[in-house]
Length: 312
Image (tube, rainbow, N blue to C red; front, side, top):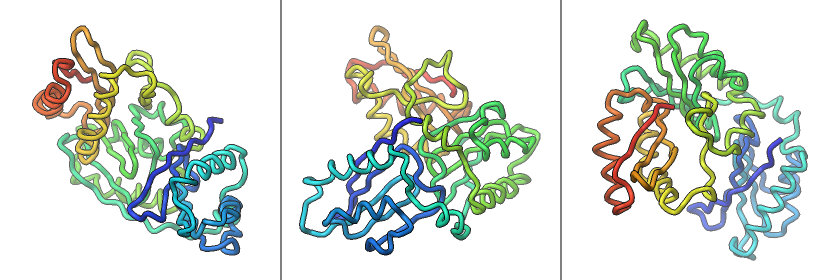
């Protein structure tokens, strides 16, 4: 089992800090505890209340948010809290008591369909977090640890599937028209989530964000792992930062994803991987040249001349 990691994330409320994890803590449920008695259903929250500055504990899918009293500053205690959370989670101790999860009510779920620049791909957006990291499925053989994707491939017109955060991009075969099948897929996704079914198994969620990047020629087709920052040279890291800050949000809004693959300093070429709606999209080449390549040239003077893409 891969270890839990904690990322400290400030919020707009200075009294509240989020401690994001690399694995799901609950499936679709969220919990709020205002004191140690309310936290009886959560051994983790009860332990946190032994810290005298803890006012409220929120536990949701992949983060724990803590509201503090004003007797301390987060800058003085947040690292200690993060270490305590890592120790607890990696001990295998219970987060939420099983009976509380099993008796929880159905989660109200909404799903809406959104068209993308790729006419073969429709984006289905849910009001719940589905996965922690982007993941792509080229065929049903890739879905060993993805029960939801496996069921989606039972629809004969589904060609490929891409998941990220709270949406699913479905790439279809030309035998069906979106006007005929959109409602059917949307309702399937909504009911599947509402019934509390697993999108990904725990094993897959654990490995999804922990494995190091592998080359395009030998990577598993189901997913592409992010490169560890410590493995990158300075220019490559700057490329990754530009992709994350300026390009990924726009690409995600269109139901796709773009990931760094490699940088060749001799040819000044950046290679990126396109996933989801971006993979095979007729307009992706134009976007790559007129947008991404121009941005890289302007922001990394003299270091980048070309951007090439491969489909995920």
